[in-house]
Length: 516
Image (cartoon, rainbow, N blue to C red; front, side, top):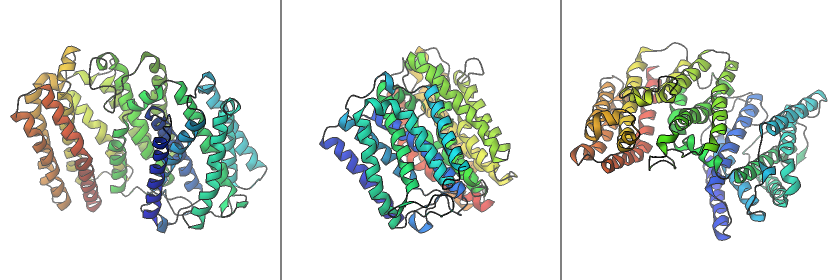
């Protein structure tokens, strides 16, 4: 059933894309992707709370994979939830584009005051519902969500007919498809934390949840249009293609340490922090202090780095404070290990980029070493959740460190010309294209030898993966040492990393589980 559910989500997303193409709707990725990303992350956190408190549950038979972090009903988050939320957010963006192709305006812009007022109003409504003993926790929570979202989107609803129609259509579709999914057994609801009022097979709380989702996404859509691609540039600053590169090592480390379930409902927020908030800080602070040099680098302005404008910087600074400040929330996990590791990662990210700190980004060799810690620290953070650190983890983590260090060198080689023009010293400018290629090969070789020397069979198999990285660099050292050759080597690495990075991580994680 889980495979069929995921296939239907994919089919729905394709259908929404088909509507955009068929009717030439003014939907751009500069609006669609930021809105989908923000809405998905926000409501995944809502779902994490719901799982923790036992508001709803997905049976194990209805999902391909259930994430660790079981809640009150002994179930975690189904892996299908993230693509479902993203597809629904995309649907709201498309609906908003049908009646109002040129949204925006001063009224659509968000402010800290409006956001704060919406949060306080939502908490007030939730608290009032609980004190009045209306329904239960789920009823109070969804009522508060809907009330806060309504206050947030009220100016937009008052002036925009398209937003009103979009929310109405979304709620109508919710009634149809939510009933179908509940009837198919994809969701189950206990009777205690809710009112018991049903709309067919679905509880009324689902409609309140959908109202909050639609109102939130509609307001984000209008705001993203009004800011003239600022949200898109800030999303690029977080490098979405790299979210998995830090989320997966953390999740894998936690699983290897046997701490996936013991963390409970905090597992999903932690994965999201290491995937989204950490990358926002890691790359955002780099883009903040490299703004002048990035403007001289022809490859910036896309997935490999945002090309920020001066007007983006105040918002970026607030986001950096938010990303780093949220680490303190993990004190609520009951352990100091988690927030300490988060703050350690923030410190190393700052040391790499900030000119008022170490600025390792401009210190050859140290730049590669500090860069490698950005991806090793999440793995160590996950392992640390298990308590005692085991000696058998040292060699795989060291191999992971040298592999990431070599990968940084490969990335630095393509920027040699741009960095020399900007008078920035890096491992690439120090060694040159050919010398840097040999250095990266030696680092990959060390990683492979460390894994090969282990007794765990899976780690020995994983030793073959750095060999593939070495083979991808042979054209770089054999041919003419040019910027184009370095750029081609980096593109080969990016393509291979989709498979090698995931493969190495899975093999090493599985071997650590065996060792533990």
